[in-house]
Length: 397
Image (cartoon, rainbow, N blue to C red; front, top):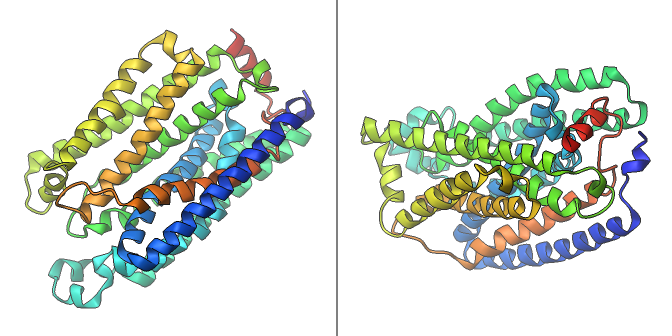
């Protein structure tokens, strides 16, 4: 089957281009407003920017990881969303550029970056070999270099596979995905420690990185499900996406909902039962005052409600309902990251600054514009993949 059969039709291409332009305008306007906010309240700007950045970087890296997971394990579910996963992973250079404000905000975000603070704190002195500004920046550069390296080869070989259909490329894509997932797991664990856990450098958790991995996978899967439902209303995906494909993706989203909840509860159970003075305060801050209601919202809307809805076979096969569940989970991913980051700065209770709204809007507009631009450049299905016909037949069955 030729790649042209699954190319982006002219009318869909125009709609994607128009949506991308609008997203870019909104994104630039949002970031411009935040730039004014950075001048008026620098500390608040960096806090708002950090948690918003964590969502879009997590979404992108989750797509990269899901793509590698599908190459490694096989399965019809991954072929209908592969182009979405690839287009998201190709925004990594943009995210590397957008990481610069986080680097500029190190003195405002991380107390371990101040020598006078470290000099008064024995624990920070002990951690200073790892928690220091030059090493922090060097690690960030290494993370992005590795992520972009794997994304580059996955996209390059997939594009070549569309042209040639060579079985050797399928084997190469599978061989690189195994080491890629290992590198992803290690780098995300370290990045979560660097960018989030070190906001409170006296606290630690051995499962923190795994929680981020589960959350990134859930963000990515929810995003691609919502987008796939929209794209399946138009040619060429309207001919190939079936309730069977949605059912498979819904089951996978249910698994990620349970994984995220299991990891988050495991961390709480271990720390709470240990009852150590160094660990408990992190949860105490998030379980008192108005922050407790955010935690309750996460239990209900991030786990219990999606879990109950996704148990239904009928709802997983109903496109509009599955898209709404995915949208709910995406909203809760924003709330979860806000709950993870903001209490380190606002221990007295919830306070939503206007930059907490405009930062995710601005970053999201720019990211979405780049994503849609990449999505228009390639066929919407991997025509050269030797398993494509089998995947399409599986969905019809």
